[in-house]
Picture 1: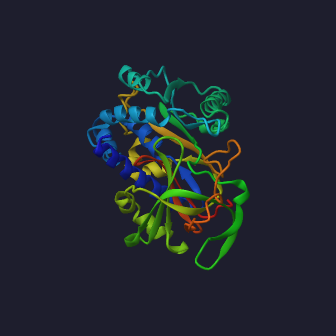
Picture 2: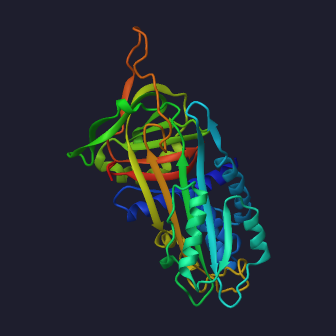
Picture 3: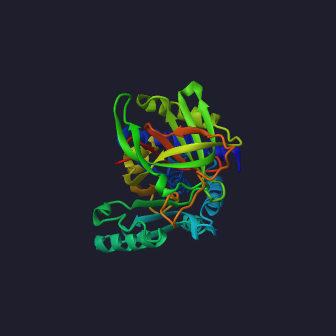
Length: 382
């Protein structure tokens, strides 16, 4: 894949994560990749200074249209369903974006933008009337339920569709991973173990245990440990970045771009991995975050999005994302019964080194070197 495209994704991912992390003091999860894609689509319909500013904020400069083609190819790879014959389940990433444009005085979508949308596999764009906001919310939730196989059902409510005097854009983004671990955890090995919420206090949390072959890297210059845990799905893994001290997560966050840039995959070694179970169901209103990333003018009347509708005065009203992760013994979603061979070695077996994820950490669900989902866990119980 194009190295400049990968660099743009990484830069936006880090910016987006830092912006959200500054707003969220608790656990959170998001998909910067899906928002990056949605904003690139809007950027393809921007003109003049608006397009130039978006190109800078999205790290695409003058190459927004080319980036959309690459996103489409990437999303096709991300959403290919793989059947796991061992666990009798599908390995799948659910993701979709829906764009609404509020109808004001016969608003019409420009043909060029319509063609761009129609060429995408995971986007739908509709012009809507807001006379019945309850019905629009219902239709959105039906779409969401279908796209996530019933895992997210209520992304929208009538309050998300406030009428405005100008044509306005509302975006919904949904992301759910459903993967099984390449080296699964056995439920009988899950125990309550301490997790340090700061340098002096700990709580007992359900912690999974398995013998795994993983990439383990010590980012000594950044006071962090990185562990890359493979999924069965081809190319997918979970990267965990944990500071040496519980109080140093913010230091690691500040160095996140350098840490990711310097992370290289190596042939893994065998460890006993201790990983806390956690579940995050996140609904985000991203207006503040996007404004902080330099996209402030999109929400103002002076935005030039005349490549989307015939009216130059169309504005971005709001953008919402629902991202759900559930990390359990089987993987990123419960599946069939799990069996492992943690204790089935011969008498000559030497016990592997133990790696315990027992402090606040950043996690990334990766596709090769691309961060698809990013989040942080401060307390696995919440």
